[in-house]
Length: 126
Image 1 (tube, rainbow, N blue to C red):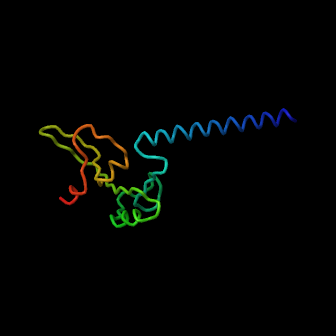
Image 2: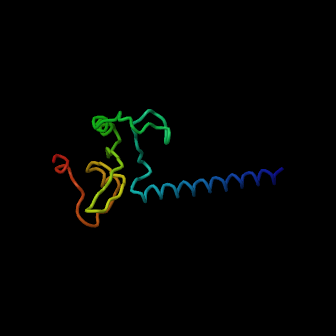
Image 3: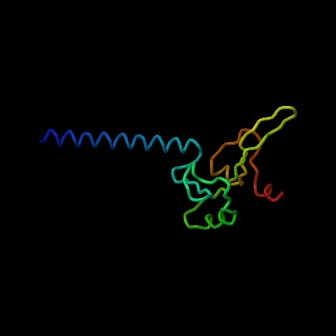
């Protein structure tokens, strides 16, 4: 009986260690994408998760982003809109995703700019 208890406890310790290792890897991957573990996304839609969500619903507004920004404990809110568009340069073209974001995008994602500069609040008024 004691051997069974010892094997059971050892098994649980191994499972917990594997779980903690996996958690650490996932959090590191999230951090490498530019978001910390305290980040989350809010999407407009019909309330269904993932593939069942109606992507044509536009129920969130910039006012909603301002309301979320005013909540205690919220440090950065980044409204974003994504569309598939055709990009044309002379005779070449491709279809890609184009993101419309606000100036908060760069500090929220913690991206380093290699060349040029990220747009700012003055650019938003143009």
